[in-house]
Length: 273
Image 1 (cartoon, rainbow, N blue to C red):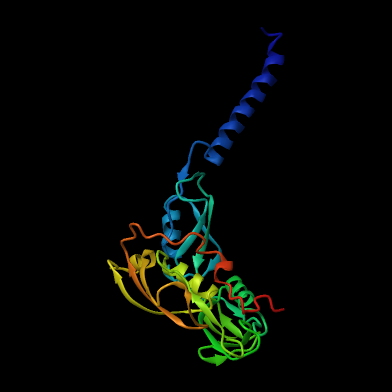
Image 2 (tube, helix red, strand yellow):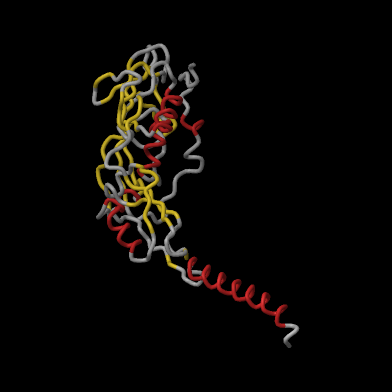
């Protein structure tokens, strides 16, 4: 026994050091402790910070976006997502809704085709307020861009999400287009089709069963004026009035309703450089 003591003593000391280090690391890293990340959607930064602090988590803002559908300054995204199990002290990265839209440079749309201009506006986060038409040899080519009724130059600063009026050529004799079938479409779908068809929304006469903004956004077209007809042609930029309903049973749009070729005006120059 005495002979083996010099050999066992170093082994015992090394084992104690290993066990001590392992215990320290477990305590330091809180190996068995997990925190569930709360759902912070819609909370202000102060509220999110307080909720995370209660769980020994840290809030870090990494970006901001702008949407009208959420309160200003509220959380619109988070990482890790709600419900994930993480260790105490973990950073939770937040994206907040900005107080106002970001400023961007107004693009140069004049001399583009309508299709090209609509694509540029969508990419930049700008909306179309109205399509106006004036006599011009180049049908459906942008001849002016307006903001709040006044010309706006390219590179002028404008808030993302604002609406732009496009003034387009209607041909020397005034081109006409068929009335599209809007039955069964939602409001968002109607905007898409009318832009493709070179027409504008008139008035929403009625929305049966619509008691909130959400009801209206999901409602579908049950009637339109003028009625859809391949032989019923109207001037470019004309308006179509709608009647909506929240009861969408049996209301489905026509097959191929979102095909741009369906609304192409044979007289138009869609790819004017």
